[in-house]
Every structure is written in C-alpha cells, then in structure tokens.
Length: 298
Image (cartoon, rainbow, N blue to C red; front, side, top):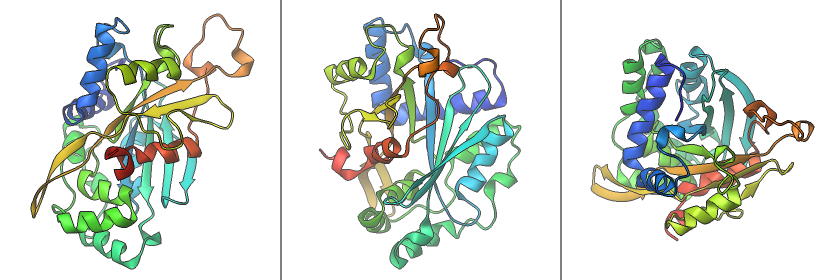
C-alpha cells in the first residue's frame, strides 16, 4: 500500500495491515502470486481501494464512536447505506491524501434483533461504560493501535457465539473478532492491462486456488455498471473460547474495479477522481457474506 508520509494515520493503517496479513493467509498468497506473475514487484505497489470495519450499534460504541479516529485524521464522512435484511447501518469516508484508502464502517442495529440476541450482545457490550475512543490520544499512533488490537469486552463463550450465529452472522463475527480489519481491497483497475479488469483478475485468483464469494454472483455490479466488486471467502481462524478452541470465520480480501465516468472517457491521463466513487448497497450486501457459513464452508 502506498502512503505519502509517516503520519499518525499512516502508521496506524500499516500496523492494522500487518496484523491482518498474519491472520489472513490469502493476502500473502495473492501478493506472492502477483509478484511471481510480474503484476507488481512488491506489496507496496498495490493500491488499496478501501478497508472495512464492523461494529456493534450500541451506546458508547458503533459508528458514532469508531469514526472519531478517522475524522480526526482528515477523513470526511460521505454516503449512508442501510441493509434491511442484515440489520446494518454503514457510512464511508474519504481522505484527500494521495492513495489513501477509503474507509467503510458498518454497525449492527442491535435493537432490531430478537430479545435473546440483544441480551447476549449486551452482556458483553455493557462492560463498556463510556466511549472508549474518548479515552485515547488520537494523535498517538501507539494508543490507537493498542485500542484497535485489544478486546473491549470479555472473551465470549462458544455457546453465545453459536447462538448469535443463528440470527446474525455479522453479530457473531464482531463479538469475537471485534475491531480487527475485516478486509482490504485491491484496486484492479490500477494494474497492468493483462489484469486490470475484475474478470481478468478473478481468473488469475481462481488459477492460484483462491475461493471467491459467489453470493449474488462472483462479480457484484452496481446499478450504473461502473463499480464491480468481488471478494475471497474468509480464511478460518482457530479461535479461543472459554470452552476451548473452535474454527470460525476470520477476515477476507476484496477486489474492486472502478470504471471511468462517461464525461471523462476521452481523457488521456485518467486519475482516481475520474472514476466511479463511493459504494453500492446491493454490492456490499453480498460482500458482507464473505464471512458467512454458506460461503466459508462450501
């Protein structure tokens, strides 16, 4: 990933990415294969379209709390998205810096769940008595990294995890994985012409044994046809619960192709501002399922 300077936010993003790489073997598998095929010479050449985080929409947590980190470091809040079936809210955030990834933050609308699921979630989130982001120095990279890397509530039981899994796979993911990076996204349109469309890049991914999320089709396409997205299926992680270890869904990798807006089709030098920006609810709805049992266990 390319960053301009070692500003606080850059250090935080790099630290998050480092942990994410260790937890998601597909990241290195894809990067190593890209280097082998001379698509890139190293990881830093890959442009990161966006990164995503999942949160619990309860008092002291959720988007309202989490976004403070990024707003403090120059990110601007953009469009709102609502996912009725999954009971989620989301916003995305942009940064004026060159090659800075977009941020996508979602939250589970806990109050819309069954009484049983609400009770389980709140037995953990109620341990957070005040907004934890207000307790950290947002100009100190180490404090932010520590906050994003450490649990806010006690270790969930496997029984609670499995109970949530029945109603909200998103909720079960967050109760264990909390603020771990959910995914990062390779901008395929920035690659060389042999791999710069999602169709070409997906063929490459399949050739190296990457399992792709086929919910809504391998390629999810926006209504205007200008935003194309695919994702790998989440790698499983060995998770520690009170009752012992269990294999559960971890994180995954996304791939995005942003096409050129019609008014800029004839420009010789295309920049990111000339391409389709933002997100699409219908695309994101299916991308969320990259951590779902139906995809992970196929």
